[in-house]
Each structure stands twice: as structure tokens, then as C-alpha cells.
Amino acid sequence: MPTKEEVLEKLKNGVIQYDEDACKEGANEAIAIGMDGNEAIFEGLVAGMEEVGRLFEAQEYFVPEILMCADALYAGLDILKPHCKQMDLGVKGAVVIGTVEGDVHDIGKNLVKMMFDVAGFTVYDLGRDVPLDQFVEEQLRTDSELVCLSAMMTTSMIGMPKVIEKIKARNPNVMIMIGGAPTSKELADKWGADGYAEDASNALKEAIKMVSFLKNLRAEKEAEKKG
Amino acid sequence: MNSKERVIRLFKKEPIDRVPCFSGMGNVTEEGINRLGYKFAGIHLNAKQMADTAASTSKLFGYECAVVPVDLCLEAEAMGCVINVYPHAEGILYPTIKEKLIHNEEEMEISIAVDVAKRGRIPLVKEAIGLLKADIGNDTAIGTYVLGPFTLAGQVMELNDLLKLSFKKPAKVAALLDKLADVIIATAKELESAGPDYITVREMGATSDVLSPRVFKSLILPPLQKIIKEIKIPTVLHICGKTNDIVPFMMEANPTAISVEQKNDVAETRKKLGPDALIFGNFDPYNVLVAGSEELVRETMRKCIDNGVSAVWPGCDIWPTVPPVNFNAMMDEIKKYGGKK
Ligand code: B12
Image (cartoon, rainbow over all chains, first blue to last red; front, side, top):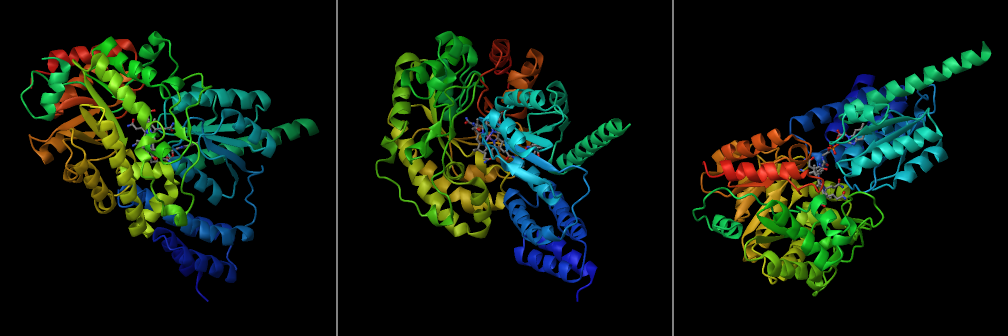
């Protein structure tokens, strides 16, 4: 039997070396030795992805490498997910994500999506060039707490405030996060979005902040009802 | 010296009075479209509207070129893809491909129709070039463009798959890029026959923001060389994003000039490539020309010239919402400062 440290190391290196088989093997070993699924994901797979992010910044890795690392990560994740205790987000943890209409740039959006997948969110990916109303409809259909909008062009970005307004009109408690090169914290504030992040890992941190805010809000409401 | 002479002499590396200010990529403006009473979505589908709009930038602002088309879908469409021009959009949305041609690895072995360059909107763009020449061709340089092989591959198949395969199965990707090079050559020759003054090869998908310099050299450079060799008129090879590490490879493709964007440190590139290389660039068409102040526009133009560009030229398409005051400031500053070096 491998030790916990050995398993974590295998998962981490499997992601870094984009070795899908190693990640699958590591994931099965994690289960065999009775490790907590979340620990294997975060201390193993995600730790590997963090190193990949560093390699990307250092220009040792480029987008193809990241995509292959992501495939390796997903290979491990698929095995580990059924063995995870549901993370206590206090809410369902569902997110609708897509690149807005008129915009086919989706490399960045896909990286953000991956972070949500690892964190155990249920992700509804609408893809790219998504008609604005489709975000509103998908949020209603899935009752997701979070909607993430990506845009890489200053023209397509103009669609974002329209989506935000429509979603908030139907359901003011939905949290909306925006991102992509031309967007900024200032624009997010101006358009009434609840969050903004520069890159994929900050996107996840920001999302977790927003979701726990929602959780507190709901708890308060419950308390009011009882009180 | 009129602007056409200036541009043509530049490509021949003959003496000129000042650096030209032009582009090889789209440069239509909302101002021009509105004055003509056209709609952005319509100009892609009508040769006269396309030509009128392209000519309006030089007529209104004295820009030193006119370029057609405006979108990146020409070759993919000729290969059988359907495009979306967003006919109902209120604002400006650039055309995109609705449905990819290649859906999986097996489908990568495509065959190319012999008359591919007669299909889709290629005849329409050819007609637009003819109209432009008749309209302003005596004084203004007329440009057109084709895609680079990797960027075209990203239009006809899922980019995620293409990127991964360029690592896992480089031979397969190389074979596809070679076929796409044939499509691009056929397109370029067809457009060339309408008599434009120069042609830009836009390989924006192969930037170092996405792809490593190593893969660029092994996979992208050979088909680029093949394409550029076949074009007779002056060529400009453009790549977006980070390019400092790949400019020597861009030169190896042997274009007449290279074009880089704002992420390129042009002073360094100039040092690397020497005084003779034609380097076009490299202001930020959105953050400077659209969103910047008049003063920022002027400052940026001087900086481009000081850093050693051979022509002041935008990092990508000129964004249609450019405020006329900024466009005028750009042209004015180049007239004042462009002869000093
Ligand atoms: C690759 C690319 C393309 C590819 C896209 C392929 C694809 N499937 O994505 C192709 C060749 C198809 C393309 C086409 C066009 N492009 Co382009 N393209 C680029 C390029 C070179 C790289 C973008 C990229 O993928 N970066 C890498 C990823 C990892 O970074 P990222 O996207 O920024 O994502 C990160 C963050 O932004 C953030 N993030 C992203 N989304 C979200 C969402 C949320 C919620 C959060 C929190 C965070 C977040 O996290 C990500 C990961 O860390 C950029 C230039 C550049 N260097 O940025 C131009 C660029 C985006 N393109 C541009 C243009 C003009 C076009 C075209 C209009 C050209 C034309 N004439 O048709 C067309 C667009 C057609 C259309 N209607 O969409 C311009 C946009 C200008 C502007 N100001 O609007 C740019 C900036 C180039 C330039 N220098 O001007 N392009």
C-alpha cells in the first residue's frame, strides 16, 4: 500500500506531467487507502495545477500544455468525485458559465470553468458566443446561485450589463461574476456585477466568497422567519 | 509624395519623407459607416458597401490605406463553413463561424475543392478591391489579408483539440496546416489578381500567449514559408500578443515586413533584427486609440516612432468606435513627428 504522501505526490506530478494514467492510478490508490476525496483533490490534483499555473507564468508551459494538464486533472477528478463528502457550501454550488454573444474567445473561460469543476460546483457550460437571453433562461432552469460571464472584446463586453440587469430583475439573489481581458473591477461595479477576477484561481476564490455571502444571507432570513 | 507612393516606397525600402500611418487589418469606423448610412452587419455581404466603408477611413481622416475584408471568416466560409454576421445586433459584433468543419481527429483528413478560391465571399472581396482601386487607388494604397494556417485551423476545428494535438500528434497537425496553406495560397492569388498593393497574413492564433516559440518554429513556420513564397506583391506577417521570442522566426518566413502588437517590446525587436528590417506596429488600438485621451494618442505615436517602427500601424483591427478627435490626433502627430527620425 502506498502512503498518503506518495499518493498525493503521484496525483500532483500526474497533473504537472499531463499524465492521465498516473492521475487515474493515484485516484484509485487514494480510494484504496481510504483517503478523503477532497483532500486528494485539493492537496494532490489542485496542488499540481497550481504548479502548472506557475509554469505558465514563467513561460515554460503554454496553453496546449495547460489543456493537457487539465485533461489529466479531470481523469483523476472523475474517479475521486463520487468519494467526496459534499463540500459544505451551505448552498447548492451551481454555476452557469459562458462567453457572451458575438465573442468566440473561450480559452480563458474554459480555464475558469475547470476551477469550478475541481471545487465541486455543478457547472452548466453554455460555451461561447452565447445569446444573452440564454444566460437568463439557464439560470432560471437550473436555479444556479452563480452566473459567470466572460468576454475578450470591448464590443461583446457591452452585452454583460444587459445580462446582469435581466438576471437581477428576475432574481436579485443570483451572484454574477464577470471576467476576461477588457473587463475590470470598476466595470463590474458599474454594471452591478457582484464579482470580478483577473484569472482562473482568483475566480474560484471570489466565487467561494460570494457563495458564502449567499449562505449567510439565507441563514439570516431563516433566523428572521423563526424570530 | 502621396500616401500611396509613400507606402509603396516603404515596401521597396526606398527613401520616404516620413513614416507612413496605415494598417493591413480592418480599419473601418463607426463614423464612416454612419455617414454612409450603412449597417456594420451589412458591409460584409455587399461589395460596394464593403469598399465604400473601407475607403471612408482615408477619405475622412487621411488614413494611408484602405483594407478589405473586415472579418476573419473568408477562407473558412469558402471551405464550407456557415458564418454569422449577427444581422440583428444593435451594436458592432464581428462575424463568426457558426459550425466547425472538423469535429474530431478522424475528420482532420479533409480534401480541398479545386475551385475553393471561387467560393463563398472570395469573389465579393475581389470585387471590393477592384471598386477601391477605381475609387481611391491612385492616391491610396489598397490592402487585403488572408489568415495564417494555424488561425485558419482554429476557425475550421475546435481550438482546444487543435492545441492539444499540436503537442500529441504534431505530424497530423502539420499535414492539416499544409493543406490549409494551399487554401490560403489559392485565396491570396485570387485576391492578388484584383490588384491590391500589399497583403497581410494574419496568424493571430499562433501568439506566444498561446503557443510556445518551439512549436511555432516546428509547426507554424513551414506552412507560413510556403504561403509567403507564393505571393508576389509585398507581404506583411502579423501576429498578435507576445511575440518578442518569435520575431526571428517571423523573419524566417520571409515576408516583406512583420507586424507586431503592443505586447512586443519594439525597441528590443529593432535591436534584434537590425536597421533594415521592416517592422510595423505597435499601438494598442483599443486602450490608446479608442479609450485614450488625445494626449495619450500623441504620446503613443511618438513612442512607436522613437522605438523604431518602420510604419505606425495598429496592434490589431482599428476598433470601429474610435472617436474622430483621436483619429485626427494620430494623423496630425505622425505628420508632425514622423519625419524627425
Ligand atoms: C487567440 C485569440 C483569438 C482566437 C480565439 C480562439 C478561441 N477559441 O478562443 C481567434 C483567432 C479565433 C480570434 C478571433 C478574433 N479576435 Co482575437 N485574440 C486572441 C488572443 C491572441 C489571445 C486570447 C487568449 O486566449 N488568451 C489566453 C487566455 C488564457 O487568457 P484570457 O482569455 O485573458 O483568460 C484569462 C482571464 O482573462 C480570466 N477570465 C477569462 N474569462 C473569465 C471569466 C470570468 C467570470 C472570470 C472571473 C475570469 C475570466 O481568466 C483567464 C485565465 O486566467 C488575443 C490577444 C491577447 N494576447 O490577449 C486576441 C484578441 C482578444 N482578439 C481580438 C480581436 C479584435 C479578434 C477579432 C474581432 C478579429 C476579427 N477581425 O475578426 C476576432 C473575433 C471574432 C469574434 N466575433 O469573436 C482583440 C480584441 C480587441 C478588443 N479590444 O476588443 C485582441 C485583444 C487582440 C488585440 N491585440 O487587439 N482571436
